[in-house]
Length: 461
Image 1 (cartoon, rainbow, N blue to C red):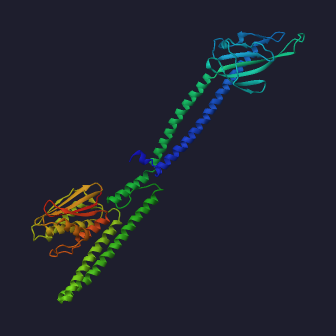
Image 2 (image 1 turned 180 degrees about the vertical axis):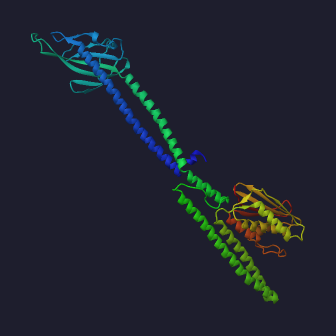
Image 3 (image 1 turned 90 degrees about the vertical axis):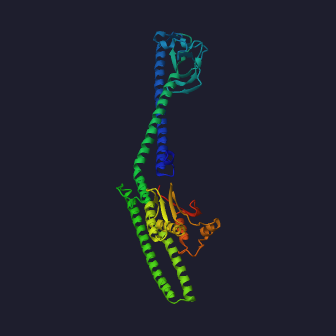
């Protein structure tokens, strides 16, 4: 069985594995999003904390003269602000006066421009903007007011905005690296969980597969009941199946007993009628004999059908074809010992019929008996296996039948020659029993010169 067949959603295993896979995917995706968001928030908070620390350093390095002009002691600033476009920038802008802002050497001839801005407590402002060399910056600013000397003829204070900015490329790279690691880790974890569920389902459903194999053995005839120990959840099912099999066999046994009793009950009066008719010859006796013979033929016909139909309801029926054919050949050699008819049997020793031996003997016996009656000196019986079915070919070297005669006998079961003893219902009985088993009966010409009857029946593969 292929993996795709095992995972079909109309199976318990497929449904359990599919449900586990869906919930595992949902849980891993939700967990991954939560972890990714938590990592992103943590890294951004650390990034902002570092920027705020650098902003405090910038403010600490700044002083003012009596007029409120900025005096910046650059030795207290990080060397990261020296290389051009280094990704670390600062800027000091005067509030209310159109003065050229002070910028870090790393900015060169650029300035910090917000693309989005958010005002925070304590005169802080935060946002993002585009920096030099295509950089995406995180910008943090704070307003600082410097008091000036009262003797100066100016305002009491001067306000400035202090900004620091940093390239978010490293931050984005860290987040992307974490998300990539998280994705592959969760992917491997998800596959591992699905594989574990698959193994769990396979192991958990193993008892059901054992029940299936046990039923297959019963159907093939190699067992008569479900044997072995099963888990407590499966044990009631196994017990009920065994009870059902035993009940079916008991019912069929009783039905066969009734059929047998009916056969004896009917045949005894018929024998009496035939004896009385034979003791008093005449037209009435001849008519009675004809009707008695017709009744016997019909009784044999329908009793055979009833017996075969009952056998179909019993699990585990199995019959060895070779042994049955050899037994029939020995019996027919004794019956036709006054005629030099050779019966050749060609059959694989391990070929088995999926049904009752009595039904196989009924069908094969009728065909072989007819062949012996019409054969000149030879009858050949060949069994050919073919997977779920096998073909039984019975041939003779007798006069055979024309195509029209074969159609007449095969379709309507009519007798073409009353001189040969028999009821004339042999082929009809064979055809009816074969149909009950899903088989068929065909007539053809034999290379021996006579008739070939081809019987197709179910086999145990």
